[in-house]
Image (cartoon, rainbow, N blue to C red; front, side, top):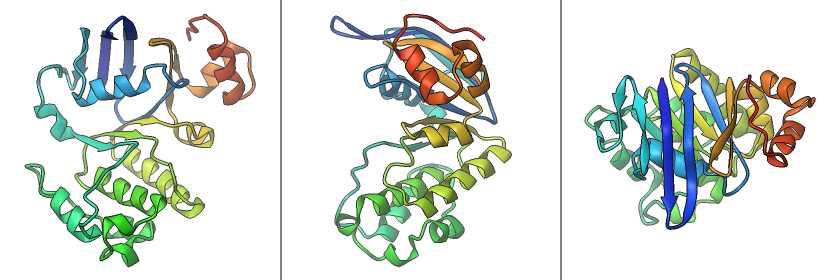
Length: 239
């Protein structure tokens, strides 16, 4: 479980996160939603230890994370924008990334095969399409079998078959008891994979709960209309 308590971050005069309180349950998938500029990226970077908040704390497995970095061994991370060395072959890159942690990584042949990456293993990174590069990104995020997975726009560029494989992978990881945090603009993924939703607006949490609870409290019939309802009001929805 991850507990976020009174988390605030300001850049100059701009407050990006404003006293955020939220909990991310273990063994579930939590999707962080919100319009551009709502604070999603900054919150993710705080979870990763890449941004130090001005106030508040993050507690993971009952231990505070801010200023401590050993906990990152427990995290698998898929960044939204990836810049791998273009001169490396796919298999060389994955082999190198597998050595970066104390615990040995497990390259999953089935995942590589399911994502259709096998024919590309000997190709150089710079020759890959955006969708194929995203598949490499997925493999590296899951290779360390981390108990916490943070996935930033994981479906970007995926074809329909790979998208289906990814959804199945999320379900398999949850069955293992892993905690999964996702940011996405792909509403179908939210509807199918989200156990809980955290909705950010202007650096504040305006809702946390299930999709059903979100539709109930907003009085809307689907996720898209519920999001629009929150985005155009100043209401903090409670479940």
